[in-house]
Length: 130
Image 1 (spheres, rainbow, N blue to C red):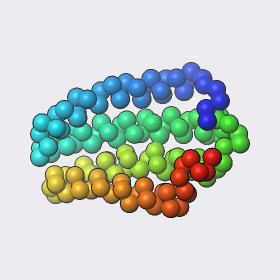
Image 2 (cartoon, rainbow, N blue to C red; image 1 turned 180 degrees about the vertical axis):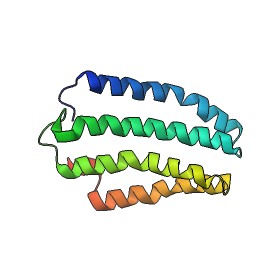
Image 3 (spheres, rainbow, N blue to C red; image 1 turned 120 degrees about the horizontal axis):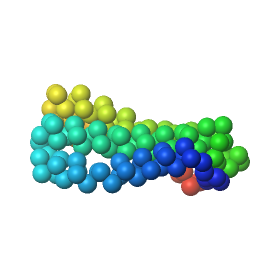
């Protein structure tokens, strides 16, 4: 999909890769303290930051077909934007829910399953669009 790159794309990509490299630490903390609100918040924030960086990378590349193939279907771009934002949206909204209960926030993450089904039903498989 990406036809060319530029300096800003590389900077966003390096940021994304740095956030991915940091994920094992909050994952380990949350794995050791699964019922701890601070551990859940750090984990949810790190997953969200990584997801937002990934979304930013795709938004930057696809805006006005800046770095992508101009023949890329608009439906594919919209589907990709929604999928990219769904994970940070669910994980960020789970943070305030964790103040009601850590278990409630963990169950909130299951919202991603019906969201994926909805996206697939609305847009088809991402591979079918292209």
